[in-house]
Picture 1 (spheres, rainbow, N blue to C red):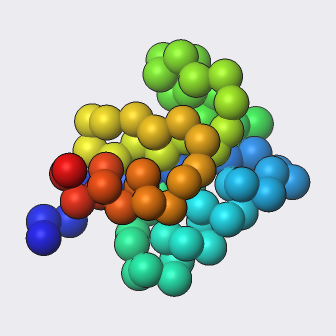
Picture 2: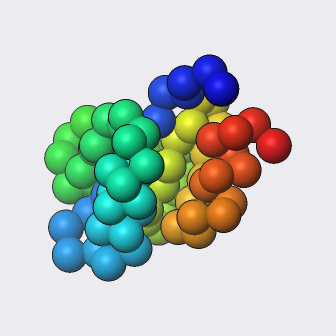
Picture 3: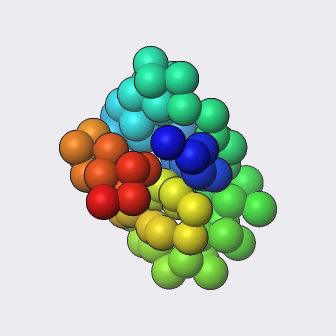
Length: 78
């Protein structure tokens, strides 16, 4: 399976964000972590149009919210 670029947008004290981060870590998936409170994170999220977190960007596809099964499908390209 070809590695895809993954970006995880989070905010502090977000349980679902922490769940997503733990899952990616447990699977050994490399990702860029981007905090929505930082200027870069806010700018990127505004461009995506997302209003809730977490947001995962896998390649050029976007997933809003956290669901491990949905992420796996997205990551595998299904």
